Image (cartoon, rainbow, N blue to C red; front, side, top):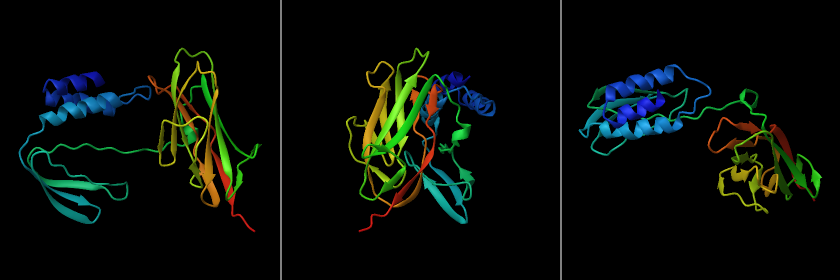
Length: 236
């Protein structure tokens, strides 16, 4: 059905695409991965949008704004649960794309035990979660797999706020804010990846779990245990 959404939009059957899209959204299956279909629907549906001018009122929280859009113009708004958006008095053919993140508690994460990842922090050869300002921390991610034909995985580790990526023997292919991204294969000689971080703030910080998932099938995934780290101020 998800593929039908994309195909209907691609051949210009707008109403059919919307009906099929609504059916997919109202009948979710936790095993389905429909991100690519959603992107395909958006891509083809935008081509069906009218190039004529659009007018509407946008109310965000307690603020109301009159919006006029010409050809190739867009209007964006950052909203949250406490500060929603309401569109009214729409004139013209209005298309909208909505994107949001939803957090998942580690206890709710659906784990595949055929792939596992653990994380340790080490300072001066001692495994610990208690640091001092000025410490250089080695972060090691260790992976294990059993009974998997899939070989290629992506690893995302999230540094707690008190640490900052430094350098390491295995450089990440991407660092985004506190996220450190690696690629790993079950055929790799090394069953671990390590990098280094430096202490930037004192205090107690929550360390989100590290995540490993298969490139072609993201449902094959697992996470490490979450934990707290403590950083004390260096005293003379």
